[in-house]
Amino acid sequence: MKKLIVSRKKAFAGSLLPYWIIVGFSKTIFMQKYNFDGDLCEMSAEGMPISRITIEELDRIGTRINNGQIKEISVADDVNNLFVSTMDGCLSNEINVDDCLKINEGRITIKTKGGFKNLPYPVVEC
Image 1 (spheres, rainbow, N blue to C red):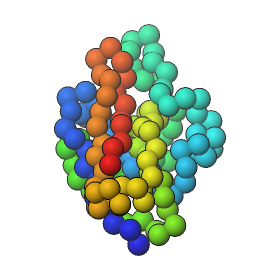
Image 2 (tube, one colour):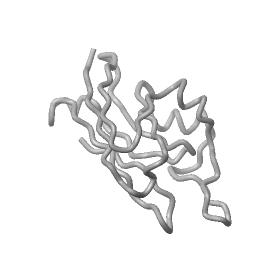
Image 3 (cartoon, rainbow, N blue to C red):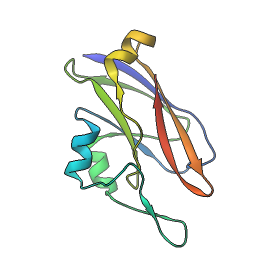
């Protein structure tokens, strides 16, 4: 088993929205399975995200992380990718878990980009 320490940096944009850490299958397969077109959700005329996935489904496949929170995650040795989703289905970049283990002992940081005029979305860094 591999141990990862995932921290979500505090940010005003998207501070009330939980994110889900998804490991175990690639972002491309995830996008095909849930019929996603692109990384970001559409926005309504009122500036609200149009959800592409349910919270129940995200709870089933991922690990919830809130603003400013740190989670320790154990993943199988054969798992080598990780990405993050917002509660509405905006997706982060995908990273290689093994690279993060080599670079900084499995410490992963989630930052929030966007907000105000654009939808907030996660970015994952080793």
